[in-house]
Structures are given as structure tokens and as C-alpha cells.
Image 1 (cartoon, rainbow, N blue to C red):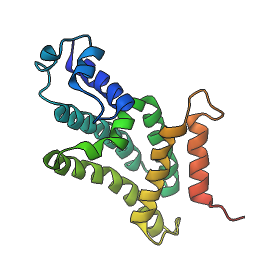
Image 2: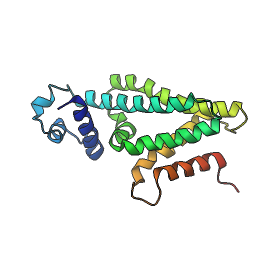
Image 3: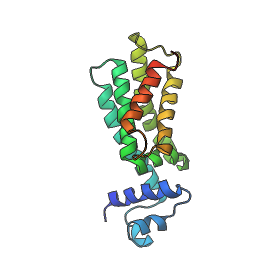
Length: 186
């Protein structure tokens, strides 16, 4: 039994039951350990939650930062970022659900530690939007609101998307990119 096995199981339990609905016994049962044995690996649900949030943001920061660093136009970067972000959410549904829905369960001290990483991730999106505005590619009057609206649109996808559904995650990413970059007006 590895710590990674425990974290993976905890993400699944948190996704199914929510942080507050999940117990350490539920996590122990998911990894076939006695509750007391689980405490040899982790000290608390808060520790698990914070580690899962750190893990999710590390993955996102690495993969989205790599796109931001490329020598591409801002609109090309944004399309790739949208596609990669949705792919990450799809490939890591349990971890994504914890990141998007359970962060509010962090205690104040852990939350204060989490927020700077979350803000770094949002800043990547703001930077590409600002780059596009500066290059005359985007018309964007409020970059922070635009970044949050885009992230909100993508984040909500995990509540309704099904891999066996009508569209692939890439098709949805393309639709989102077209909506953002082309708008609704004819």
C-alpha cells in the first residue's frame, strides 16, 4: 500500500461522498486497510485534501505552463490551453472533482496555503488573454472576469460530460474555443 494508492482512493471517495460526507473509515475501506493502519500513512482528512489539491494544481501548472511558454499566437495558445485543460479534467475526474468542489472544505491555514497556487494557475490564463489584447488579437475589456468566466465554463463540464456521450472532450474543447474566440453574433 503506497501513499499514492491512498490519495487516489481518497479522491474517489471525496468525489462520491464529498469531503464532509467521507470518513477516514471510508478511505481505509477503499484501500483495504484498518482505520488505525491508515493513520500510519496520513494524519488527517485535511492533510489528504491539501495534498490532493496540491497534486491537481501541480499537474495543471506544469501542463498549461508548457503551452504558455510556446512561441505561438495568443489565440493558438488559448485553443491549446482549453483543449489540454479539458483533457486533464477528463483523464483525472476524481482529482478534478476534488479540486473544483472540495477546496472550500480546507481549514483556514490550509486554505491560505492553497490560494497562491490556485492564483498562479488563473494567472496563466490572464497572461495569455493580456498577450492577445496587447497583440490586437483579442478584444477583452475585463481580463480577470474573462479568465474566470472561461474557467467556470470549463470547470462545470465535469458535472455533465460523459466519455460515451454525443461529443468527445476534444470536440467540446473546440466548441468552447470557437464560442470564446468567435462569439455568438453572426
